[in-house]
Image (cartoon, rainbow, N blue to C red; front, side, top):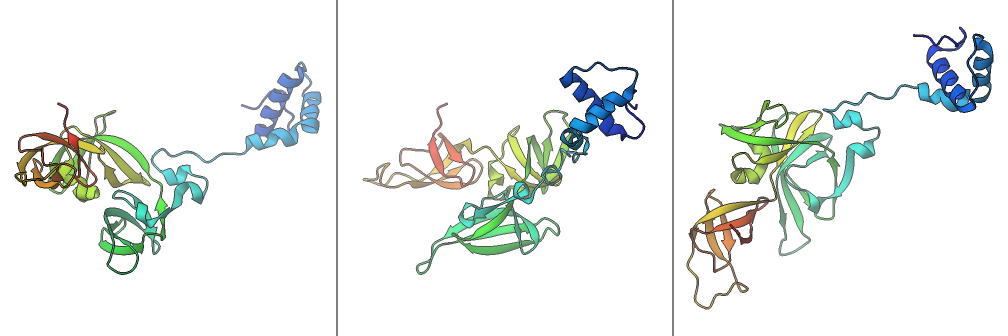
Length: 263
């Protein structure tokens, strides 16, 4: 609806903002004659308030790339030794989700990181190596929380805790963390332009030790660890005082021992 005090030769969006804002600031009473008000607005405030009429980009909650206004907000340079499973990187003009990573220190030369990753467009997997001091382009993702329901073949069935809708995603999005998933666990799902590209588990979980090697004579907790097998089938190293049947806390990133469970 056009403002009743705006003259016909002033654009509709500009006149509404100019007349209203200036009349409030200057406390000039609105009269039946629109021209004095319009002239005052155009003379003193047109330049100041006209930019308020410019349209802004509409935010799309499902796409962090549409929400961003610059390439710096959509991506960032990251040192290669900081690459982790679940991250999304851009390499050779394509987008890849990181499945596994391993830092290798050869006998000669500097350390490097070997990364297994999957092409977001084709689904093809590849392995790439970088020196740990190299930089890669990491893409920013939108993160949403989901609850794990069950596994159906090669798919994870997740549930949105807000509207209870289900979502299926490939198991291999989890990389090496897949064995650590537990019923009703809260997962952090990463999305790029609305598509799932990675999953993060809680940093630690509690599991039972089903097998543990016997303590070697003279072995102490500070000297060395011994092999053990967890209830999810993962093998890890535990202190000598840990025995089968005990529950321990391990890191979901690599299955390493943290501490004996407190309950």
